Image 1 (cartoon, rainbow, N blue to C red):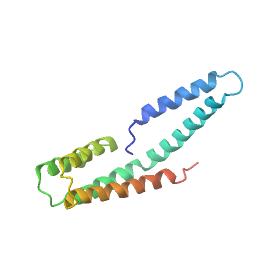
Image 2 (cartoon, helix red, strand yellow; image 1 turned 90 degrees about the horizontal axis):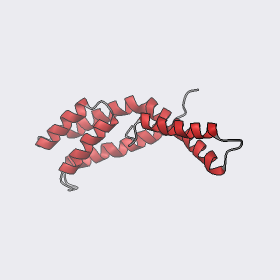
Image 3 (cartoon, helix red, strand yellow; image 1 turned 180 degrees about the horizontal axis):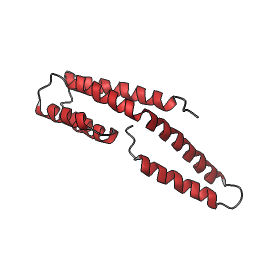
Image 4 (cartoon, rainbow, N blue to C red; image 1 turned 135 degrees about the horizontal axis):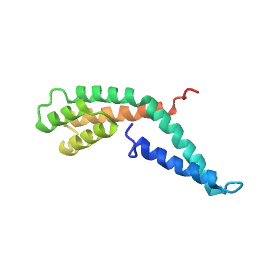
Length: 136
């Protein structure tokens, strides 16, 4: 959901590996074979990520909205607005990153603690989505 590379960029990379494998004469060398297996892994992870992205985005948006409720600081209000309209994980991630940069690094800051709690659970949920069996 929060991959640094877009799905399009990942697919271009996989395509290049597949093109290289198709252009190989005979048996693949060890490096080519490992690149092909890595490309296969990328496609499996991308499929899992895409399958869970909508649900994870909705869950994260809802949990962050709850975590920010009651905090009237201007930067929190800005983040709340950006989170509400975030169309994807990148936009949501940018809003959260900017918010965390603006909040004091104080363990007593309840908003920062609540946001970090949401991010910890998001990580667990994303790992579960990546580990879930894919249909077909």
